[in-house]
Image (cartoon, rainbow, N blue to C red):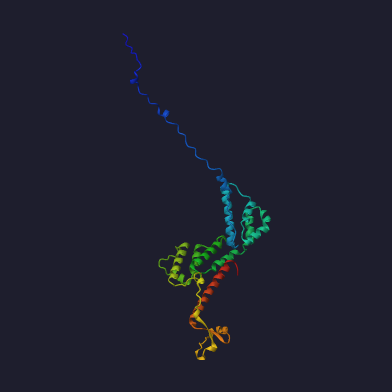
Length: 320
């Protein structure tokens, strides 16, 4: 008996569903996005920028030393960015064209060929210091530091002058650098006598542990409080431009011949020179002598403060 089974095609309405395909064959191929490449001129723009500071203003030891140090820093940054060194002649030229102070520009124009022939940057630094920095500048700067006192100036002006002198000595080396303790001592004990006295009697004031910036802030606030409470007279910078004008009624021109002798105002010794201005027939006499005297004393005091400030400014510029 034949038991074989014949398999026939199924009718269309009984067709088998399609078999699922493998997952890897159905997923699309992932293509990573292409990142944009940096513009080729980015590194070139950075490499061509070399910021050399300008030498201007007063050509003292502080400004010249700071300028030379900033030039050296600019060259080091250029080397770090571009991985290439600058020739000494290029460094000298780049520094020379930035000498905009009149004396420095004249010196560069007169000696540019000789300076461009130098073999190292250190030789150029030595040439600049030999010409613009006095040989004993360290002793002069040290004397200037210890000669600073507050006087009639404001506290912040005094602190700024002291900090500038300290910065000048920072490149002086061993024996000339001002430590924080020395700076604090000078700042406190050469300030206004009343301010120094008030600072010493503040209960919570721990002087040994106070930093320089903290001491400046504390003394500045104490000074402002004393000025506001009129314990200390305001400094010259706030009163010089507001010098009171003498009232017009303080003076009067009198005709001596027209005034009876028993009505003449007595002229004091201090006022006699003023009476000579009117000649023999007219005398300039004061009506309120005491008010005039107070005003004159106030004006003389302001002028004295102005002369002190002018002397200090001239000494800072090296003019005796």
